[in-house]
Length: 174
Image 1 (cartoon, one colour):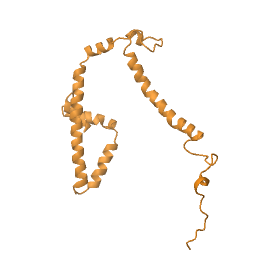
Image 2: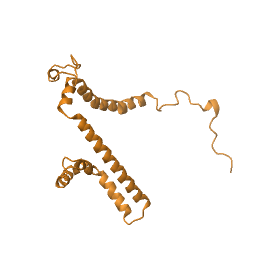
Image 3: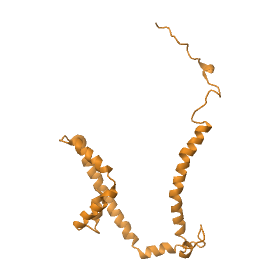
Image 4: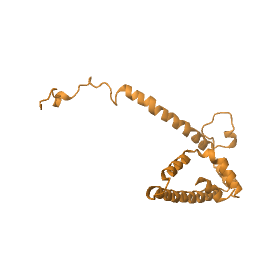
């Protein structure tokens, strides 16, 4: 009963397959071509679609207005200048906008983290009825796209008098 019925596979040098024995694998020409065309080529195209407009915008920011509006294709500016940046700095209160962004982001992120910690603790460690139902409702609420709630949030915040206030920006994002 303990005798093997199949012969043992060859060991040592005889076990190694020759160059013709391996027909498909990760480094074959067909696999390489399919990986490049099916994987990397779409990624490279998507990267170019996203990066080229940003690069064009950055290059155009150093051009004079007549160069930007010209019908001739001029890729690099003839005489690069920072006049556009100076005009933007003088016409718009950029430091105030930056401070507003820091305030809204830091307060909003802090409140979101605290609420997430409290919610996770309650859902994991506290026993209460309908815990699974509440968890599923939270997941369903996370699946709703934010674009759906823009108008109802605005109506609610406007009704509470929160238009153009910090809490009117922070509260809908919670």
